[in-house]
Length: 231
Image: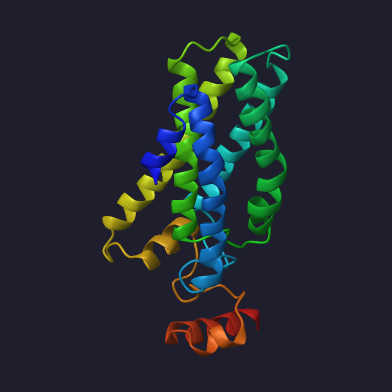
């Protein structure tokens, strides 16, 4: 599939090629992300209660804030008279990033955290990393090709690139930390450490009755813990 996509875009500018791939892959990433919520309620569904006061998912909030500032600064210092392939990056990708990080991210990803709930489990992280790889590829194209931008805007692009890589580094650190723990690596151990959730309540409360009826015994135990905490 990937070979077919690149054969169809062989005559395109490198940035246009990456954007064409992103145009096809982006909806796929979103569909897979939401599909895991529906098809894997125990391993992928979010809104689990965050118990830890300090955990990697809370640390990345600061990187998110830095990313919002970077995107807004980049938009403010952009060349409004840019034309050609330079305009494609600004009016296409950067404008989309502005929408994502100032509207979609706060509503879908930040708001649940304000209520002490997770926004995903490990399948969501994989979708996020796959989507970020496209943005990283775009940044590489901008830095290595003959794009003509002002120094301030290029600085914003560089900062966004560093922040994107930093989020991945935090997640890699979390994997290493869990692997070196006494319990060893498992998806439950990773979710517990990265998201700061309770090992006794690892499942999302957003489940249908039929899903709860066929759930693992651990879910029934977590329901009892939730009721005990509520009382």
